Image 1 (cartoon, helix red, strand yellow):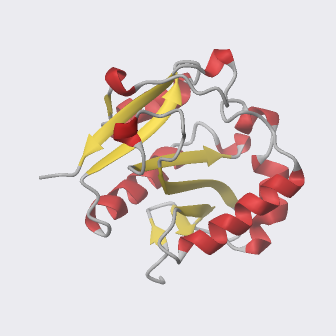
Image 2 (image 1 turned 90 degrees about the horizontal axis):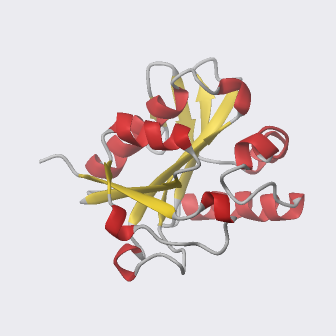
Length: 182
């Protein structure tokens, strides 16, 4: 595998490419997937976001992999590392590394998100030497909260904040962290 590709028992995480756009629009930009991410976005905004993902991946920016099944033909989601930039976040979080994931609804409940996140977490600590990794959600997103707990993240209520970019039901933003292994 190329240095920028991650692999797990069932998944391949590949850097994003422009050819992902039709799949992202059809399977990721849906009401169910975007429910806790401020909702479905206009196609042109999705295209701009994907182009940004492609450009940033190899230029020291964020890295959002497209997650495929090992068959190499089936995309199931996206998982990545970002620099926390929400203007609403506390100053202590600004610029810190965070992990995030989204998966197409037909692939929920199969452990793919957890498996992909574990690979990205290992990459963050081993390859990027990230000392602390953050993750964010809201109490309304019970599935992500359970996943953060399963992955070993610790709730950081002192870092929670209200983000006006999200509806009231998705506030406050809850913050979780994981320290690099000793």
